[in-house]
Image (cartoon, rainbow, N blue to C red; front, top):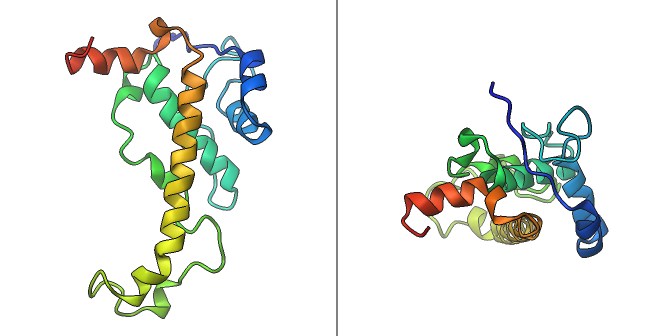
Length: 158
């Protein structure tokens, strides 16, 4: 792999502008060792379904990397990024598939109705994480927004 200089963030500014929970997620997406210490991690942080915060950090990293990483592979549209966040948000009350044998029969089924609050919570979480990714990348100079610049040129906006 080529030697990339990942973007570095103004941690002090972010510490002042982000909530404690947001800053905790931010800390998971920056490198803690080596020559990139304090910069965006080169790879997505490890995550597991049981640890919702690790899943949030994986999603957040993907969105920040899409906008700011100099690695061209990170500039692919993050279409599947939300797969990192469990649909049930680790809630034991999420409807179980086995309890709804007709769940695929039509969109008006009881299963889809019962899942709606969880889908809405999932969407709201993704929106909050997208907003957090924007807050983080807004602290970077324009020349470090590699993904934004690349897509802007491709779409004729820059």
